[in-house]
Length: 445
Image (cartoon, rainbow, N blue to C red; front, side):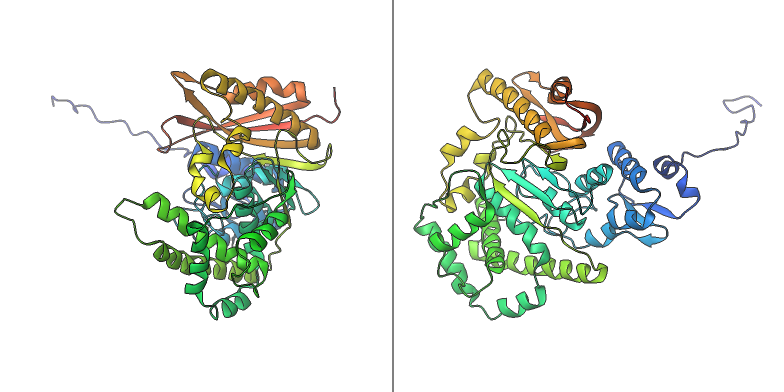
């Protein structure tokens, strides 16, 4: 027989199939029932899953409560399965936007699931303290809270300190009582009272940095909104304010598009969605008997942190990609509404200082100083996890992951692990994010 397939095709037996779970668990999956979430597929996620499992492979009961990437542990659903089921707007899978992560649409936050895995690798616990010196909208604080790990967040932007404060405190409100009380409020009147600050803005007077987020909250209600639901608990009033700020952000960004609608419509939509999320959080907390750890939020400078030497057990943070993303411009509507000056903040924020090549040099200087400060406040043998991107400036692609690795030995870091995460879509100027883990040595040089 002539032709392409004249000879019989030799059958090759399939003797082995790559078992990713076996690699992640180093063979433990053959002894006990374990399951990764179906959407855990990228290399960096599998690496993080392996790293978190390595810390708790001998204590699967605790691991079930803490894991980020496992759906089932010893045949039972993980706590993250239930937590990530409290879905928020824009959520895809189990990586972000669950719980209060979606409250207020802050651009530039990192994935809560990833943060949780990094905290697990550090093996921090309820006796530890974790720091995020660039706390943004509070992702690290929320993840620490659900692991019952106390945390501290610092940010130079007072408006973001407010957002982080509210998102964390919202995890532990008494939702049934909140719902009963809130439904008796004249909500249209509350909305109109908040809009007065748009029509007749009052400047907010804040103390000099550093100051606690509670001081800002007190100033807001005393100076800007003394008559808005004055009989409510402050934490409940804060949620109403955040719903309005979220609506204002939606209204600002969607104005002139096909999704534009009146500000009050966004307020009403977000009000309903916030209540749904808060009810879900309460239900899951009750089901799991899950404690919520405390968090302290400070408005301050990551280049001169108001913390003692060797006072935190771990650091998880994402320094601003300010060269690629203008954070002040993105949050200008929020800052303006709260009566906060944007020019002064622009002069203080890492990556926005200077112009042209000078800006890159100043960013380089500030990143180095921030690494020095992280080392100063970190306890010996503690880990700092830093998530940062490669940024294009002109036709030059920067690589601050390598820069930090070069500086690390000067600041007593003696071990380093790097993971690379591709950016799919998003900002064209970013191709990759890097997760850089640095361990501080046990004694200064």
